[in-house]
Image (cartoon, rainbow, N blue to C red; front, side, top):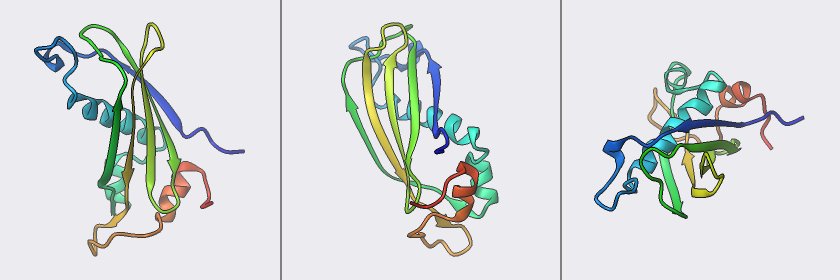
Length: 139
């Protein structure tokens, strides 16, 4: 049975994230993805401090966002993050929804690769520590 590789968080955009058009400035969505990613990785005890302790850095090498509708001040967002690839890279897919209505606000994905801290070399296969933490095997 495949483990649940997803996690959800809820957040309410603060006033300082709102732009002159009275919506969340597009750049703040990246911050919201990071909050969801950290919560997801913490679920598996492999957030950034644990990554560092395991000898690997995991830089984001690709990020794609599709804006569907605007988020606004005071309206809670539900952000679902799910790990969808883990063999050669770590891909996390995200869906941001209005918490009250369920309407999609944004969808995105990030791709991270393992880099050996000791050698500074990128790995072309994810290290076994990732699979162990996630409870998966390479496909």
